[in-house]
Structure formats: C-alpha cells, structure tokens
Length: 130
Image (cartoon, rainbow, N blue to C red):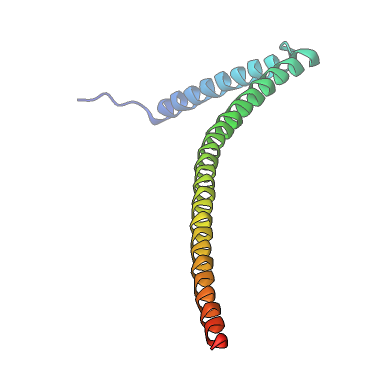
C-alpha cells in the first residue's frame, strides 16, 4: 500500500521548488548584471590596438592571397606570351622563305620572258631583213 500524501503538501513542495529555482535564476542574473556594470572594461587604446592587430592580420592574408592569385595568372600569361612569340617568329621565317621563293620565281619568269622577247626580236629582225 502506498501512503496517502495530502494534495496540499504536494502543491507546497512543487511551488517551493519553483520558488527556489526562481531565486537561483535571479541571483545568477544579478551576478551577471553586476559583472557587466562593475567589471573591467578595456580602455579605448587597448580596444583599438586589438582591432588594429586583427585588421593587420586580415590585410596580410588578403595581400598574400591576391599575390598568390596574381602569380598563378602571371605564369599562365607568361607561358601564353612565349607561345605567341614563338608563333610570330615562325611566321616571320615562313614569310621570308616564301618571299625568297617568290623572288626566285619572278627572276625565273623574267629570264624566260627575256629569252622569249629575244627570240621574237631576232625573228622580227630576221623577217625585216628579207
């Protein structure tokens, strides 16, 4: 058999526990509030120096990442420039070679034309003397 506990006593115990919890909560709130009010606050100089240090580290990291990115892009651009310069040089050599071949062809055509002209002139002279 279970003993019969009066209902009123149970309510008193529950309300007492809630009261103790509320008091503990108020004490903790009050301690937190007094720490905020009477606690040590850093001076403006200390706060500014802390902010400056954090900003310096952020700037340093940003600078390093930007330099790293620029370096990788610069290497790619440098490689592309070297390829383009090599192609340009090849094109110039090819143009010079083709120009020489064209000049040789033109020279050959001049010689052939001079020979043909000479034959016609001899034929004309030969026909005019008859």
